[in-house]
Length: 322
Ligand code: GLV
Image 1 (tube, rainbow, N blue to C red):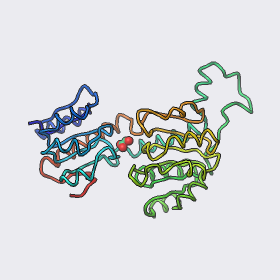
Image 2 (cartoon, helix red, strand yellow):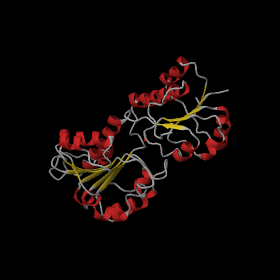
Image 3 (cartoon, rainbow, N blue to C red):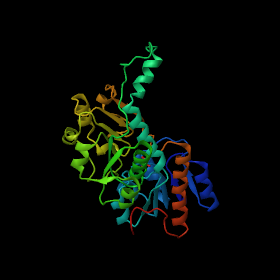
Image 4 (cartoon, rainbow, N blue to C red):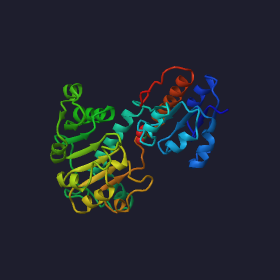
């Protein structure tokens, strides 16, 4: 009986933890996505699944896995897992909070700076041999960050790490929305809790750091873009479906906002066709957590959760309460 199904290739350090604990696993070292039927066959005997955010783990998978005790997602987000279905079946779901906080906050800032200073277009310009010398009215004139207002939607770990960079590193004013006020962040970085519509209307940059839930799906539609400043730049390193991507394309095309920096897409791996045509958009392929250190930490954390649960202990990072 294979106790653990590891749906994709993961780091050796994570595998070593399972070996040390004497656990038995199947590791998809080919690293090709498993189809639903393949997954259903693989999990038939499993007590644990170590999944990536690209694996859809729903009731169809769980019903094929009568011995399943824990689904350990190698991600902080877990919208790929039907947590309610897992809870009903007594299956623990875990994630990897904290492992990618700084890395993702860095990427949000990369996108803020890249969009503010037209870095990608300027790089292409240079490579194309178009630079003819310094001019006062050079192409690619951007905007500076000091004194501008950054609106953070979702003030959890990553939102707070972005706020710290913005307030302390770049002397920006920071507004935020969150389900509850964050007095420590307010005290440490001078950030201000505001309503969503105030954040939309007052921010020069808006950066999204909320999980994808039924409440945050399509939080940003044309109505929200319409409330933003025409000079505003929209940054999303959270989850694509928080934004109605067709509306974002429309907002950019109509000049309702000035630009966007995107790491995540509504229908990954596809980006809405209109996005690539817009010069004021910087797009990267879901690399928020993509440093070797972070990805290794995430895999190890998932393995630690599995070891803990399969040795009869409590999970370290549960997302459901059983
Ligand atoms: C990445 O998107 C994650 O949720 O960890």
